[in-house]
Image 1: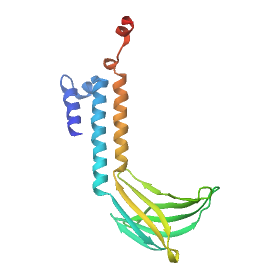
Image 2: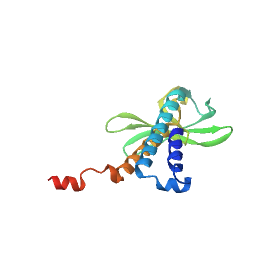
Image 3: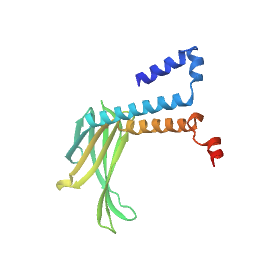
Image 4: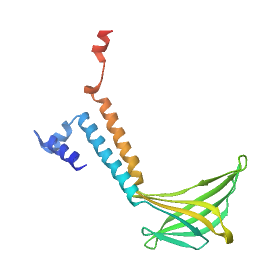
Length: 189
């Protein structure tokens, strides 16, 4: 990312002031920069997610708390949450960091009536630098539940990097130098 920014600086200031030079840079340059920065963002996302992700499988009853990575997950309990074609439970998990509530994760466990197949609907608390997930497992004795909690840092950066690379690709496609065919192709036919 740094070398991409340095390349932009060098090209923009080669013959003109930075303000004039930056406006004279072509689509191919911006496509290249977005592609390289997008790749770097994706690599940062993959690396941080792979290295720093945390997953915990815990047994929780109403009022129980689990703390990791500075986040406290407090299980507030479950309630019946039936839908038109399923029977289910919704578990509510409050998430706090340094005493400040960040939100409530509302994970669901559903049993679809037609297929008799249990499904888990995970709850997500999304952020720019991390995502928090919660999923209900099986109901245990005494009203306790098996709960799976996840901390995934920089997971959204993987997708953001892909979007930057895609935008770079679109910009490259509109650059006239990269268009094939045109007049020469029509004359050949």
